[in-house]
Image (cartoon, rainbow, N blue to C red; front, side):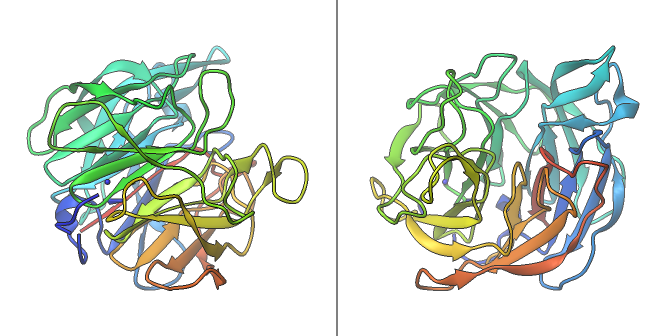
Amino acid sequence: MLVRHHRGLSVGSDPAWGQGSRGLVAGGGTPWTSKIEYVTIATTGNAAAFGVVHGAGPNSWDGSSNMSGTAGDGRGFILAGHDGGYNGSDWSLNLIRYLTIATTSDSADFGDLTRNTGRGAATSNGKRALYFGGNNPSFSNSIDYFAIATLGNASVYGTITSGELGVTDATGDGTYGMVGHGYNSSWQQNTWVDYCNIDTTSNTTLFGGAGTSPKVSIEGANMFACSNGMRAFYGGGYQQSAPFGGASFAPFIEYWTFAVPTSNSLEWGQLPGSTKSAPGCSDDSRGMVMGRGDYNPSTIYYFDMNATGSGNNAATFGTIYHPQNGRGNAAALAGD
């Protein structure tokens, strides 16, 4: 996401396109869960029960993982994913589920994506939502879109120009969507991020790459993403070429400025601890990392997206429910 009306979801908190006062986290974990929980982003504290993800697939009672979340116009969307273990196997899903963010309830059926997939990424401009990439089992460069106001199925938007992509997150600024990092079809990690105008149907364009700081000049996957409408933030996750020697789960946060396409990322700071496959969401100033992913306990972190400089630190917000081995590969979204 890059102009402004102005998701990394622009200026200010605009619940029409995916920022808002309430942050939700859905599914994920090992064993997988169907729980949906929420927090009030401006406060701190533990997450509270919201509902459950409906219709995960043949084993819907087992929960679902590798889903993606986005929001617009008061609705939250939980997209695709893998069902929790029919006869020990994962089932890729094409489901679009939705809910009303201001209430507490289970999700309901909205429609279907054009393909069965999981481990992709989603964003919106409040009127239209995009779903990028994913894998089933190979990684894809396809992009789907659907209209937020009307129940129905998705259509083909275009392709991710820089390549196949999965195990990633997306964000935007209300006009443009941004997606990147993650894995390619050879399970190699990417440094690039692409962007596109959400209202059109087209292919993405390269926005930029990782910056020169040793903490962000590396590839990454299993990362979170969020935005204040001016900057797009990526952080956490797994890095195959760590700055301190060997692969690692890194606590670093980087950002791009939407108004400066073709730029590289800059260092923002770091999290209190490492995360892996933890999703992000935000209001207009506070970025949220909804759990530590595959780590226990499932601590929620928050950080000031308007802070300047490179030596900033995120802080502990509270916790979310976590199964035995963490809450990785959940979906997150924010709105009102």
